[in-house]
Image (cartoon, rainbow, N blue to C red; front, side):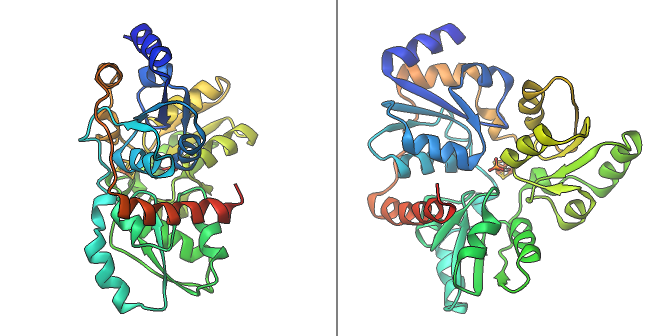
Length: 298
Ligand code: 13P
Ligand code: SF4
């Protein structure tokens, strides 16, 4: 399957963009593996005709919005993000009425329609930077409560209005698991994704998105790490360095794991499943995504 995928990529001028949580066999066929921000930037810059997105739907949608001329394929349309589903455009419109002064920041883990209702997007890599750079003192942050709360802790002068969404993978990491792992590996550095609940973030040495975790591990003197995010992240860390040891605190994201090699092959062979975003929504969502990119200076 891997060699058929490689041939099809060449013949169709296609690239495969994969999120850090993907399966090892997907890593092997990917042209680039990264965090949500890096993937969006790659999608925006590519000259390839087809982008096969090995990730979840909001990521493929962002790729289509940022590079609308390209054909964007998601190998399994059921690969959604349950966190993104906590916010709908309708609910957001209602909430905005309660806070007319607030700027709306949409975590990229949201639908195109929610992005379209927002002033600017952010990812885990730049949420604090984006909220800090906004002139608004009041921010309505959707849909992840934990990430919003973490931003609020970093920016005490801003009033961050939270949304009641969460990621089940990160919310399931318990303080007991962290304590037991720390007991087994007392020298290990604890890294937690900002989607983790506060009690886990407080037990961590560093709170970082998946891209930040990679950079931190690379420059750290520690040799053992407890990784507070989706367990697929360990593959990326282990491929980066064999001299350090990694232990997973989190479980699997079942929708991320819906993308298999067979589905990637099927996707390339049949141009399935094409992601389309309604023009009016895409235009507004693009403004929010582009504003994020501009604010980060990329
Ligand atoms: P990153 O942008 O940190 O890779 O996070 C994406 C995600 O879905 C986390 O669960
Ligand atoms: Fe969504 Fe959580 Fe899966 Fe990330 S790990 S894609 S936030 S459900």
